[in-house]
Length: 379
Image 1 (tube, one colour):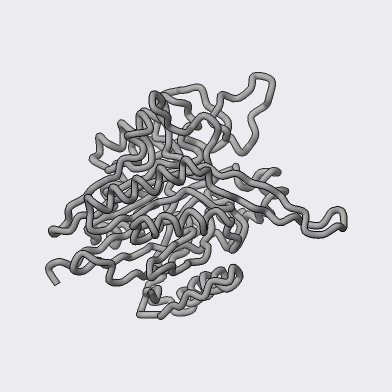
Image 2: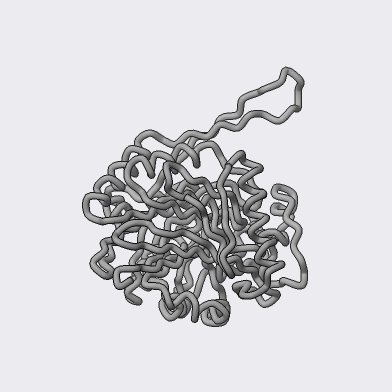
């Protein structure tokens, strides 16, 4: 059909050391076939020698030695061209690491992305720009993209007169559920009302301008299998109630479950894609806090084995409506490249089964259907 539109979406991208073309080589030919490609940029693009900041986004304390969590390289500006060459047109920079090279590195990144004609969402020179949607008109269909960050490093949120990301901040409380000392608490997370209201306003406004609205969230609990925080349901449902047609989740570096809410899919995490981690997640902190079990045979991807499973999301739009949503299962190889599992029934089923398990673990009853190399999400 002439009016059929294909969108390909992937999760976190973070190539280091000018390796973008190499990391995307196995998938670029497929990615570039879409009318629109979407990705989430984890780290800044900056070639300037800026004062590196800690994971908080603030300059490292002169009295504190840098943690290995801080020891991840920024992306090279040359890799922005690799994103474009692979077919990406929309990029969210609403990341917990967006300020890790400081404000100047953040602004450098916006300039680099826009010089390559990438539509940037979720980040801007002020809060108005950060909340502004990317509006694309493809085959007479208007599609809006919005981006938000709930993993907000202090000082990285945009304000009226300050650059940063579009925040949906969250408060956490711990409730004792047993009088027995030392038992695990119930963890309750709630979105800040002001941020949630702003997000709802943005989506409603975008829906007046576009036929479809896709919303990207940097959110969730990273590295821990399956777990979905309570605020993610609150925020995801509010977004769809406001008019969003599909939710793209990322940050956890591991696939999570998928919810179909009022017929609209919420992908809580679509994993990593063209992402390198040479040190940080295999650090003593990572191993202690998140039970990371890196494999030395994957030197540029030091995550636990289940983090190597990922996906390429395929969204089909027909007659200005969401028609079909599926994902192409993929795995990260020993060189750090993401490879689509074309024709490998066993591995395709392993990724599908993992996503189904992640759904069941969180009491999500989402149904799937295998069609060749794709797994269709039944809505």
